[in-house]
Image (cartoon, rainbow, N blue to C red):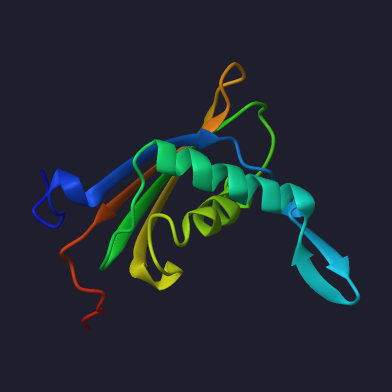
Length: 130
């Protein structure tokens, strides 16, 4: 195991439904952008499913890895990440600012579209040296 990462108790592995595209997540209401009904339902469903899989709040700096298994060979990878990450706020981490490193991978799986998310606590410091 890489010494920059803590013990297994500081890691979460989740398998969640394939997320909706960011294009379908927001609506404009009275001149303001709000999350759509589909977006609210996805976030609610993710909260329940993540907790069923043992999700808990992790403290400190985190690394998150997304493996997106799409049902068709269309669509941008990053279109599926933000709602998935936002849905886990308050469930797996208190605030997005805890995430200091992101990895994302795209695969095709027509039979079982999903997103697999690993969240790992890290020992590294969030600093850049010249």
